[in-house]
Image (tube, rainbow, N blue to C red; front, side):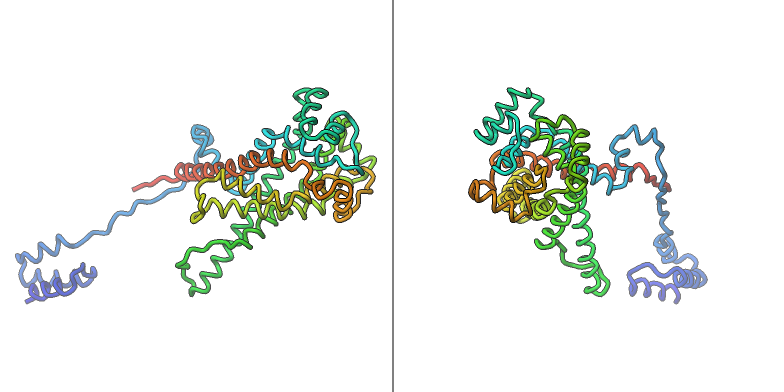
Length: 385
């Protein structure tokens, strides 16, 4: 009778019994019919608890980390690695395009009110960028093309680290808030739809990154500009000392308003456009270099006049250049609208490869960081029986 009951229960449930009930039925069946084949079948079907493997987290030794460089890199905090990725990408890109950058600055500051002396500045003012290129080689040699580059690289390291790193930080913060809100709206459950940042949110993140990086690194940009256009200045220390003694601390931030007004929208447009152009659904999705090029050209066209104004304010040793609107009016009155776009050709020639290299290298670095973090995690994780 009990065997029949057990058979009926097996058919009805079609799944393993709870341990307690299975034991009771088997016990009754064994009392009624010890040799019943159902007892054998039931015992064979009785599952034993699976032995779960345990995961132990260990800290690898320095020798182990040094044996695998990617894991060693992955041992550092991810936030710091992201900022380092931006710094190295920026320094490399700036050094490669330093000659074009100097010629661009010479072309920008060649207006009638604030004139720099010397054959190089004169050639740039009177004959244009090509003549300036020849004058640099003639009077300063090949190293003249990299005059001011050390200040540029020193500035690029924190500047690109800040603007690229803080852009990702701002995006991650905005994304976390959107996910949290979506989860709350979904009754505490994970949202079913993919959450992405809108264009205004990406623009806001870019503007924040541009403003923060400009504010913190502006004095180095001023020093670089002075070195590029003033033949009397031979090094960073000389520029810093001379400016502080003769013009005061405020001279290091002369032109900061125009800079933030120009750089904040430039970074916002550049980074937002780059993100959108390389993402899924874009006609050039997956083509990061082309996306970076188009984004750079678009941002430059919109914001270049403000960059010209801030350069003029930077080299004004007397403080008479005036505020942004006044400088713009004087440039237009003397040189026409085209004066606001002085040096835009070498600027595009410089910024196109520079920004393309910077953005693409930064993305590659982030992928390498992701792999390095995984290698470090694998080295720290050991599964035991």
